Image 1: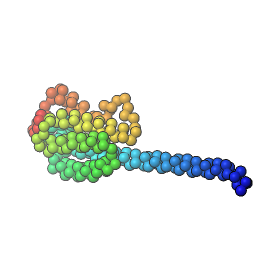
Image 2 (image 1 turned 180 degrees about the vertical axis):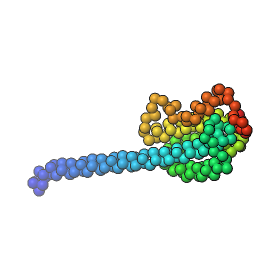
Image 3 (image 1 turned 30 degrees about the horizontal axis):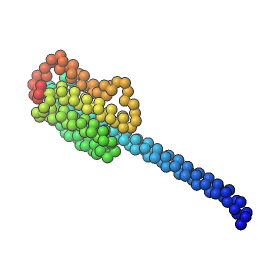
Length: 197
């Protein structure tokens, strides 16, 4: 018994050391797993945001081309409504599918910014289709440009990418063209039925 009592502090030290080693190893493994999961979800969010941005841009671009054909937008790359509206409907369907992934994986701020962007794209679609809306074409383009910028800022902040010194670089280049045309006071082309202009 005397020998056991003499070795007891050593045994307790070995046991405490083993427990401490196990706890440290477990904590390190949990932290590594959490980092791996975070990277995995960031990659999926990045893909979801990029696919969604492409889908909204496609919808917006088709709306602009249809509007150009109708003389609402100052561009020569017009697309007739007969040809463009089915393409626009298909693009809107694709955007809706991509939206569900953003809803599933996105953070609150990015989801709100994404919704604002596709609502502004929907307004462009309505104008291109000849429907009455509360904004002029120039104002609708400006709103879409700002919504695009807010989406990119929110998405980049969400996945930890620096926004940069020039956040206006995320705005839509078409917005500048339309703003320049509006400032110059150029009327829409002949035969335009541009609402709100």
